[in-house]
Length: 262
Image (cartoon, rainbow, N blue to C red):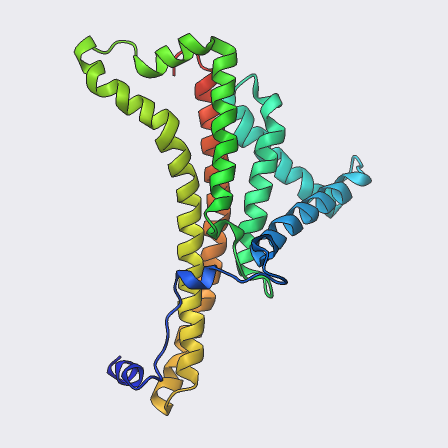
């Protein structure tokens, strides 16, 4: 550690990754919409579409491996995230939940795919947009089912609570439903993808820096690379988990909006 500090003081030290490494320049031109994350998002849509079209194109009673994979993902979202959470009205929300899950999962996994190696959801604008879609959908569902007046009344005035408590509880409930939910939904996904990718950069870039140092540092570099590889497998689990959590919370919010009392 002291050697690294001394090298840094001499201008040859390790420059750790930062948030600047997530601000990628345009691939061509000066247009902010031609950056790598934008193209990756469009690529993910094409990739998901091609995969599920190919998986269902020659559907058979005895499924092929591709058909089995596609059906397994769909069945997971349909049964575990839609039916079990939302209830008997689940089918009309399956397309959105299925699209949400596969889109987030694919863009998360891009973070550990060679050559791509960047999770699009580490740019906070993408989670924000997905959270807005969820926000609009679950409020629309609640208002359509109960009417605007009753829907807002049940949010602001929770049944069975002493009236004086409403002075404190009503603002908290309003903030929860209209501000906290979309913010936490988006920031949870963003923060996990940002932090995970940053850690991978630290160990991989750190290992490369150590490899170029003196003999003592060269001997340490394999441990940094090994830790980076181990973190890659851990990051894969986090990427899958975050796609699941985002979709699960969306289903829970929809289920709450459909409930008689929420």
